[in-house]
Structures are given as C-alpha cells and as structure tokens.
Amino acid sequence: MHFLRLFSYLFHPLFMPFAGTVIFYVIAPGYHPEDARKSIIIPVLILTLIVPVVLYFLFRNMGWVRSHELSGVEERKVPLYAALPITYVIITYIAPAVFSVELHYFFVGILIALLSCLLLVFMKIKASIHMIGISGVTAFVLGLSIHFRLNITLLLALLILFSGAVASSRLYLRAHNMREIVLGVFLGALPQVIVFPYWL
Image (cartoon, rainbow, N blue to C red; front, side, top):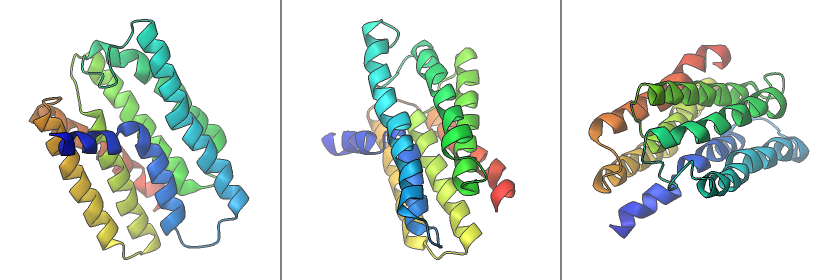
C-alpha cells in the first residue's frame, strides 16, 4: 500500500514538465551553455512546481479544491485554468522555438493535453492527470530518441515500467478506474505525437 502510494507521489504530474526538461538536457547531443540551461531549467522549476504548490494552498484555503488528488471533476477546473497561462508563458517566453524547438513543442503538447483535460471536465469526464504526465514525458523521450537517433532503450523501458507502476498505483488506491487510466495515457501521449512533425 505505502509502496504504491509512493509511486503516486514520486511521479506526481507537477514533476513531469520539469522532469522532461531535465531529461532533454541530459540526453540531447551538442553543447548547451550552462547559462542557457539555467535560463530554462530554473524558470520551468519555478513555474511548473513551486508556483502551482503555492496556488494549491491558496485554492484550498478558498475552498476551490479539497485535496491534492483533485478527485472531484469540478474541482479540477480552477487548477487547470491556472496551469494554462503558466504553460503559455513557458512556451512564449521561456522556451520559444527559436531557442529550443524540442522543448518548445514539448510544452505545446502539454498545453494541448491541459486544454483537452479541461474540455473533458466540462463534459463531466475525468482522466488520470498522473497518467497524462508520465505518458507525455515518455512520448517526448521517444521522440527525442528518434530525432537525435539515440539508443536510450533502457531509459524508455524504465519510463514504460514507471508508467505501469503509476497506473497500478492509481487503480489500487481507487483514485481512478481503467477507463480514466487509458484516457490519461491517450491525452498525455497523443499531443506529443501530434507535435512530432514540427521538430522531428
């Protein structure tokens, strides 16, 4: 029980944009000046992790969300409203295409996933945001392996293994049913695949 719950925390969707950014700089070939890396990694860390945590406590105090699990469909609206402009800022100012085309479209894919998730909320349909996060990063890394012709089979295998562990965790904890898990995988991976042609 505690082991499975650990996967839900370690692979929380808030960590995934930052994780994808770090993985990019670790595996991407070529020279990336330290200042250039910091100019993206640090703002991404602040905007996708620190700011959302602060906003969560604000939203909770205002009664807009009940827990970090966002188990109710309706309580997902406000966090998603907040995530959309944050992601847009990253796309436009932190990781523009002229600076890093791969990261730019990684976040474009994230924006598409967020918009899709919000649309489902209006339809009273819940998808696993945990699976959106981990499957999005997995698809992004797969794209990087194709783009740079990298042999990163072990990393991809680990990401797939972790995806299965997160899915099992969400099911075991009864946070989601199988349909919501599959929908989360679809919403996470498909937007990344859609943007592949723009940078592959």
